[in-house]
Amino acid sequence: MNTLKAICALATALTLVSAPALAVDPATSGALAVPANRVVGMWANEAHYGPCGGPAILTGLNTVTFEAGGTLVDNPRAPAGTSLQRSIGLGTWSYNPMTGQYHQLVRFDWFLDGTYDGYQTVVRTFLMSANGHQISGPIVTTRYNADGSIRAQLCGSAVSTRL
Image (cartoon, rainbow, N blue to C red; front, side, top):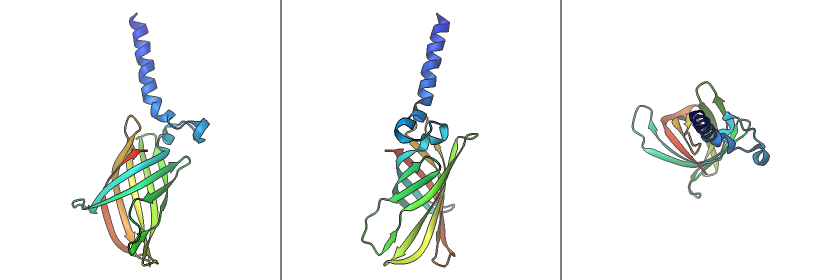
């Protein structure tokens, strides 16, 4: 009887652990149900950042779509019509099965009154929650001038919730 309870408990635990990986169903998404692809899908992201070593004084909101195969699209959630605007971000992501950490690199362009004003990169390392509904970790973002020189570097953290 105790063996049966142990087997049932183990089966239940394995089901709960693998449930987030099954959120990426190859039959409907085309993505293989492997641990790396747990991140595949759309996420609402909120980042807080400021001077590296200082307080987070800025907030960024965006929607990130992680695609199977290691690419991503980052869409800012900011009002249009201001003189300074950014493009969508395009990037890559990877997964380290030894640490369970994901790594992403995103790049987007800045325009001032419709003229190219440089670009920005965001480097992020994050972990996924056990239920697969949240990812979080530190970010470092670097803003470059149109000539490629560094304008500013900021640090902070970001939390994303699966949509």
